[in-house]
Length: 150
Image 1 (tube, rainbow, N blue to C red):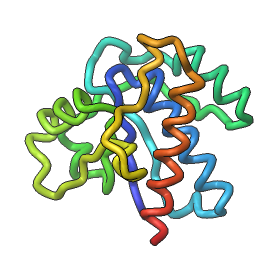
Image 2: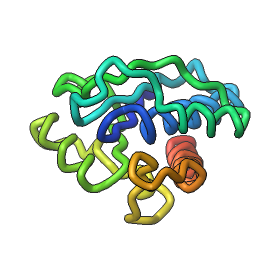
Image 3: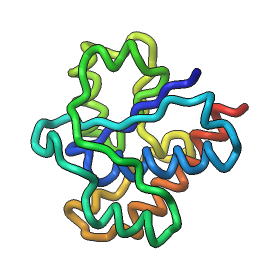
């Protein structure tokens, strides 16, 4: 079983989008029984809230089922529980590493690293551009899945 935790600041926009997109890709490959896929926040600001309406609308527009989710904060225990902890930007990576108490097993990575880029996933909370975020998330998730399959 391969376990993946997608993480962003509030766990309502980027990480929930990545969770739904990646789960959809895995299901399309008939590999859903091989994965545990979840998402979390580095902050406590949105705890308990559902995915942002912009994320929900973009996923529906793309024909991707929205995974029912309530925002939660990443914990130190998540570091041991997941094989991959995937952040969306440099601030997420710093906060994830702080929450985990370090990254001795090198499990914490930015999503677009898998696509050969150091770029951050565009944050629609600030840009309002869920299309750009979706494009970044798809690029990162496709590359992550290919990396895992290989």
